Image (cartoon, rainbow, N blue to C red; front, side):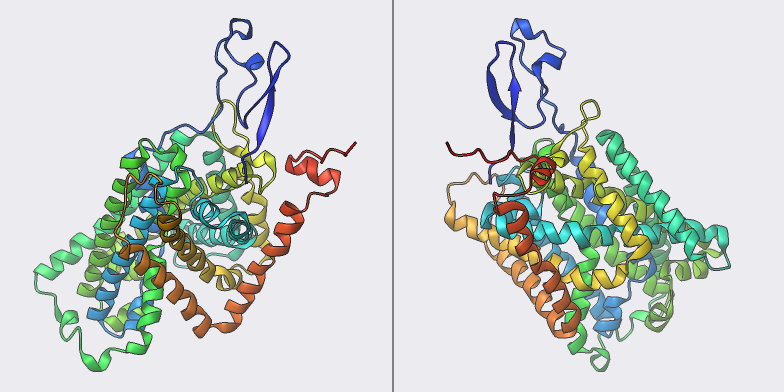
Length: 493
C-alpha cells in the first residue's frame, strides 16, 4: 500500500505531491521567493548505540527477574536444568534478535513486526497484526507493567501493610501519564531517562549478583549439589519452562520499531542487539546462580518476591530498597515499550492503515505526538474497567505467532528478492530454528490452554472484516473518510 502524500502549494500556484509531514515552504523559516529548499518535519536520527542498547535492555528486564523468576524452576524440576533453560532461551532469543537485525538493516523502515509482515506478505496480514496490537495486546501489556510500577512504588510507604487497590490504580495512572508526557515532549529526554533507568536496573542486578558470587566463592554450594538429579527432572514440563524463559527474554525486537531514528542502522542495530542480548543473558543466569547460593529451590518457589527474600537473608534492612528498584525497572519497561510502539502506529498511519492524524509529527519537538497518546485512553479504560490478565491470556500467544511469521518473511524474502541489499546477513539455519521455536510455542498454547487460545484466535480474526470495512472498501461515509484522511472517490463524468 503506498504511503500517503499531501499536496503542498507553492508560491507560483503549482501543486506538487510531498511526503506527509513536510512543512509548507510558505510557513518555513526560509524565504519562499528566493527558492530556498523547504524544510522537512520528520523524526530525527537520535538513537545512538548506547541509546539502542538501553532501549533493548530496558524493555527486556522488567519486574520478573526480581519478583518471580520461578516459572522455569517449577517446570524444569531441578536447579541445574533451570540454569540450562535460562541459557538455552537466551541463545534462542539471540537467534531471533539476529534475524531481526538482518530485517532491520535491509528494510530500513520503523514499525518492527508490522513493517516486516507488510513487506513480505502484504497489507491484509499486516493489518490483522496491527488490529490485535491496537485493541488488546499493547494496552493490556502496558497496563500490566504500569500496575507493577504502581504497586512497588507504594510498597515502602505502606509497609508492612498491604497497598490498597485504589492507591495502586491511582499511582499506575500517574506513571502512565508521566511516560506519555515524556515521550510526547522530547525524543532526547526519553532516551536519556531510558539510559538512566537501564543503569539503575543493572545496578540492582549487580547488588544481587556480587554478594551471591561472594557466597559462592565462600563455599555456599549446597543448593548446587545433585543439581541434575535424574529423578527430580520432569521432562514433560520442559516445554513450559522454555515458554516461560522465552517470555523473560521478550523485548529484543523493540529497537526495530524505531529503525528510521537509529544513527547508521547498518552498524548500530546488529551491535546494539548482540551486546544487549549477551548482557541480559549473563545478568539472568548469574542472578539465578546468586539466588541459589542463599535460597534452596523450595524456598525460591515459596517466595512471593524472590529479590526481597534474598536481600532480607543477606542485607537486612536494605531489602526495603528492592521495591524501589523494581518500580524503576517497571518504569523503564513502560518508557521503552511506549517509545517503540508509538512508531508502529505512526508507520501504519503513514501506510494508510490508521487515521492520518497518527502520522503527524510535532513541528517543534519532532515527536509523533498523536501516535504516542493514542493508547492513553484505551489503556486507562482497560486498567479501571477491564480484566487485564484474562485479556493477556487470550492474546499473549499471538505475539509469538506474528514474530514467527515475520521471521518466515525473512526466509521468504531471501528467495523472492535475492538482490535486496543485505548489509547484515545471518546463516539461514538461524531464522529457521527460531521460527520453528515460535510456532512450537503457539502449538504449546493450543495444547495447554485450548479455550483461552481459541478465544484469542477468534478475537484476532475480527481483524479480517475490520480490514475490508476500514481499508479495502472504497465507498465509506464522508465522516469516516474525513477522519481517516482519505479523499472521497471522484464521480465519473
